[in-house]
Length: 309
Image 1 (tube, rainbow, N blue to C red):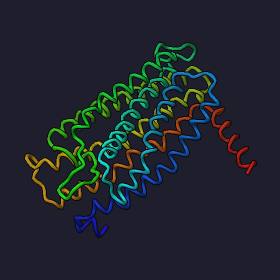
Image 2 (tube, rainbow, N blue to C red):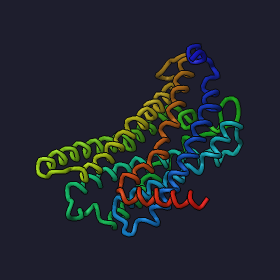
Image 3 (cartoon, one colour):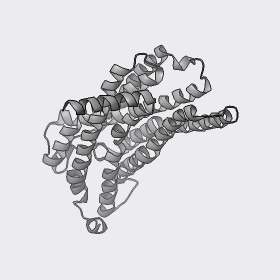
Image 4 (tube, one colour):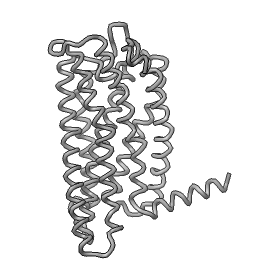
């Protein structure tokens, strides 16, 4: 607190070296274990892959690709790095995971709504072939959407070569424009879609509760959507706000701010970064909410494994 109040110029560096390394290490440990367990469990448990299962499995593939880069990221923040190519690749993987996760969570929300809307038949969007096409389209779209990021990411600053974060690299003005476009297309629009289907799902559940005696089976899809909306609001929103504020603070042409203010903005932005990527740790919980049988299978296999030790 003392360092923060005194606006210490080294505060962002301290956060990167100690806070980021600690958070990313914990995310790697818990996220990797959780995603591997539910990923392998799904391969052995799911006999028939429905649309929701396909979206969830793609979500876990995205998370694992991100989690596997964290050990290098921790090392680069604690010891530094001169590998510019790997630095750029790692930054792109961070964004790739973030925006694929957002889109897959959005389609999971849509899928859960359709599950309630059409409980006795499959809507076109719930067909397995459609889910596969949508999943492939999501991967392609994110690749195209993030392709300009190569232009904005740099690894050089005034003090020499180091692996800079996205908001601290490149020309501030065009970088801010691109970041705002990403915020709108990759975050705000999916968030609005998710809120829309949350409201629609809640209305359907209220309607069903007036017609049938129990709504417990129908409440699971609502729980999934509530979790997805919560992840958006609590994890992703602060990161997107502070990323744009951080880039804007570097644009001296229209924002005149002191070095103290810039350091504080960078410090807060640094705090939000690992919080946004906590989704890779939380996402496996979606698997456990898909059905009781999947949870029972995981617990049974874990019990059997402990007994063999």
